Length: 330
Image (cartoon, rainbow, N blue to C red; front, side):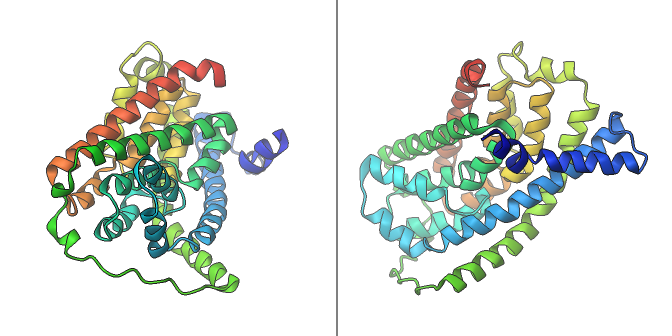
């Protein structure tokens, strides 16, 4: 298990190879500049490899769950189970909040209960399968699994709250005006599914890679240039509002799990608390400003505000819980 974690997920062999090559090129990796170059190259290459593999696997799985089939599955369940299934379906959908909104609109227009569609919308960017593997590569299996469990809890509870508030009237009218008949997706062969997964790798990687470069660049700067005492003071145990601050800071940012991982890794290495780091990741992936602007086109301000409030409270609660249990799981 240790070999799998260290050599496959954490790719320590790649870090050693990069440091060896940089040293042969005359760059001292123990200096700030050398350390920044090493961090940048290693994280870009590691995330790129994991990204392409994960997109292929997740897209292959997703080929079995087109929107029509997902709607059919969701329509069979009611109450708590429906919200749970909606959250679980969110784990096999695309990687960022913006790409989940068209599916959310489709589910809502198809008559799926509003609370269930919001459980899907919350879980999709927060706890997809890609996030589980990437979190394992940085924080280990235990933290990754707990993160996913908490993310699903937030998604289910958030959906249940919205459902019980009976806010169907807060959805824009055009959503309900476009209710269409469900169409059965064409049966795909294994070759078709592989081709689809390959297309998704190219399409998603093209969209995501710029954010990887920005995220890794920020992470390299934090890791090698920002003094440790500054991070500890701002986001460490002596600041009881660190989780809230991280959540607020995360909202204006736009990235997915692949862009936030290197920032989280750098902050954690500098002394930021685990709950603070994970709250930042959740806020960035779930409540990014561009996704909220897109969501506003489909729902009215009152429902949008309730959605943001529920997610924010849930993210902050998860952050404080992680801070409390961190000594037991790290």
